[in-house]
Length: 335
Ligand code: COA
Image (cartoon, rainbow, N blue to C red; front, side):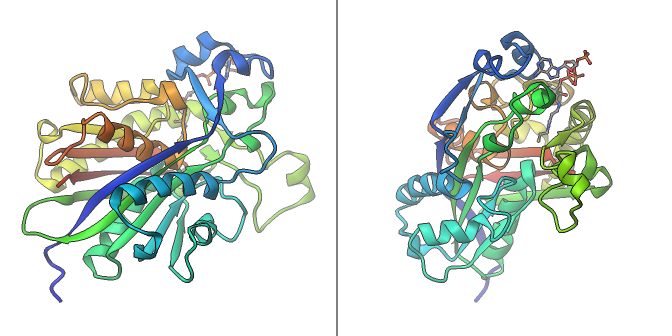
C-alpha cells in the first residue's frame, strides 16, 4: 500500500473536567495566598479538582473525555487501533493509565502507550500518532491527556507556589488516517527535550532509587523553579514556533490560531508580544482551569472547535513547554 498520501485527520475531540470548583479565595483556607496574587501572577481565577476521597484517577477522567470524542467521531471503542495516554499523574506508578483506560473502554487487547512528556504530551502524542498513521502501523488512534494533580498537591504554605497553579481534567482526540493529496494534517512538527534541566521541575518520588532520607525530606512533593521555567518558556516557545513555521514554509500570518499550553497567562502574553501575534489569535483558558498539564492543550482545542475558532481549513499552531524539560511546536491544517 502507498502510505505517502496518508494524512492524519483530527476527527473529533472531547473534554471532561473534574467536578470540584476551587476558587482562588478557597485556597486561602489552607495556605497564605490571595486571589489578587494568583490572578496577577498567573491569570488563574479558579480550577477544578477531584473529590478528596481518592477514588478518581487520570484514567477515569480520560474515560469520560474519550466517550465524548468517540461518540463525536462515530467510533466504537473496537475501532481504535492504538491508545496514546499522556499524564504525569497516573492512577498507579505502573502500569500506565493507558492500559487502565483500555480495560475501562471494554477492550480486549488493543495496544496502549503511555507517554511522559508532561505539558508537551499533546505535541509528542500528536507527532507519534502522525508517524504511526503515516507508516500504516495504525489508522485510528485515541489520544488522551489526563491529570489528577490535586491529591498530590501540598495544601500548606510550603507548597503554595505549585498548588495554586494546577487543576484536574482530561482532553481526548480521535485521530484518523485519510488518503489525500492536499497539504493537510500535520504540516510540521518540532520537538525538543533537555534533561540538563530536569531538576527545575520535578517530582523525585516514587522512583527506582529511593532512600529513607528521600521519604523524610518529602521528595514525593513536586518541586518547581518557577522563575527559571517562566524565563525559559518565554524564550523557547517563540524559538520553536519559528522552527515549526520555517519547516512548514509558512509565516506567522498563515496561522489562523495558536493553541498554547496553559501554564501561565503571562507566558502566553509574552510569546504573543514577542511574535507580534494579534489579539484573538492566541487561545487562552487558564483563568477557568489553571494548568492541567497533558490535558491543557486538548481541552483548549476542544473548546476552540466548539467556538468555531478551529474549522475546516484552519491552520493551527500548537505550542508547549514543561517538565523534562520538553517543548515543541506542531502545525496542523484541519480538513
Ligand atoms: N501566594 C502568595 N505568594 C506566593 C505564592 C502564592 N501562591 N507563591 C509564591 N509566593 C511568594 C513567594 O514566596 C515570593 O515571596 P518573597 O518575594 O517574599 O520571597 C513571591 O511570592 C514571589 O515569588 P516568585 O516565585 O518570584 O513569583 P513569580 O512572579 O515568579 O510567580 C509563578 C511564580 C510560579 C506563578 C511563576 O514563576 C510561573 O508561573 N512560572 C512558570 C510556571 C510554569 O510554567 N510551570 C510549568 C508548568 S508546565
